[in-house]
Length: 209
Ligand code: URA
Image (cartoon, rainbow, N blue to C red; front, side):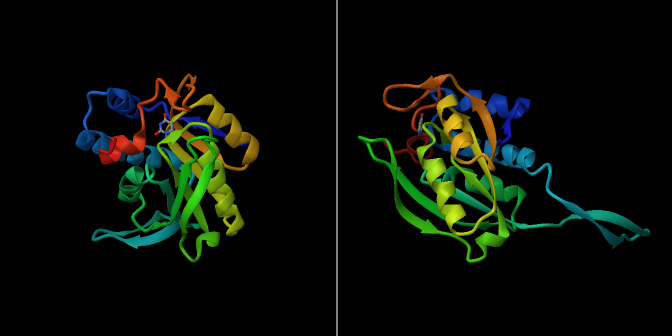
């Protein structure tokens, strides 16, 4: 069974509460989503493997640590996931970036794929899938399935707000994928929006409506 990490860092909690408000405009919303993504990336990379490395400082020789193991990739689910990419890359700048485009069919609420472009060596990378909102879990489970079909073996999923319904579906369909969640909300409403949530993350990041 996957591990669900609820990020209880005070800065993450504070910033999520801030952007929930309908009074926060596009510019600020986008900036703070980026900051939250950076903080979440920090937490979600805690267990990356390190190896010893010899260093000669201007004063003496010493042994330090450097990252080892699989290279990284960030894969946002379009379009709202784009809002988290820069924040992630601010901490892991060497990561490659793939894109998966899925939209929710307004009637069935099921995901429909319209775009997929991944790093050629994505099957050798550890992939961080990002989407600010985990609602029904339809898009995220489909995106992860697409990655697995391309041979990706190690996947983590990061979202800012999740509904219990989405978490349950992710754990059922992808028990090997750990979840990093900023806030676990109450439920979905009849339109499959997260309650209390923050509204439509894509519209709020890009100023569309
Ligand atoms: N996607 C969003 O942007 N918001 C929700 O509440 C649910 C899905």
